[in-house]
Image 1 (cartoon, one colour):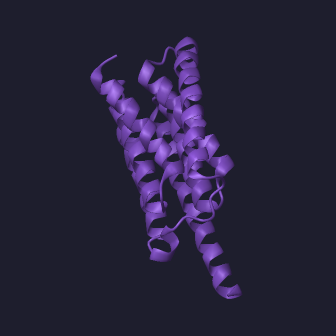
Image 2 (cartoon, rainbow, N blue to C red):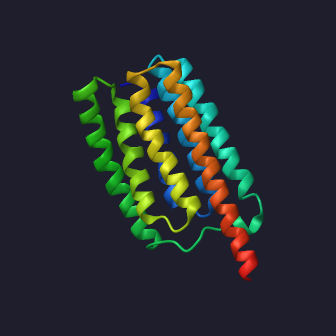
Length: 195
C-alpha cells in the first residue's frame, strides 16, 4: 500500500460523498467529476491506461452534459432533501465504511483485485445506492446512479480490459447523463407550463 494509493482512496471517498453531501448541484457535480478523476488514477496505477483514459473522458463528458443542463442559476439549488445534514453525514460514513470494507475483502478474495480498486468499488457502490435511496429529483438520482456505476467499473475494468467493453460502458455512462438531462429539462418545462 503506497501513499499514492491511500491518497487516491481518500480523494475517491470524498468525491463520492460530495454527491450526497454537497450544498448545491455545483458541489455535487464537482464531487462526481472528482470521483471519475480518481477512478482514472486508480486504473492508471493498476496498469490499465486505456481504461483510465476512457473512464475519465466518458465521465467528464457526462458531467459536462449535466452541467450544461443545470447551467441556469435557478437549477443549481437542490430540491427538497430527504433527512437533515447530520443524518446524511452519518449515513455516508456508515455506509462508506461498511461497503468499503466489504468491497476490499470481497473483490480481493473473488477476483484478486488490489486494495484501492476493490475498496473504492465498494465505497462507490454503497454511496451510490444510498444516494438513490435519498434522491429527491432526477439530478440526485442520476448522479447517484453514475457513482454506483463508477463503483462497478472500478472493479470490473481491472478484470476485463477489452476495448469493446470500455466503449460499451462509456456509451452507457454518457447515455445515462443524457437521459437525466432530458428528465430535468422535461420537469422544468412542465413546471413552466403549470405555473
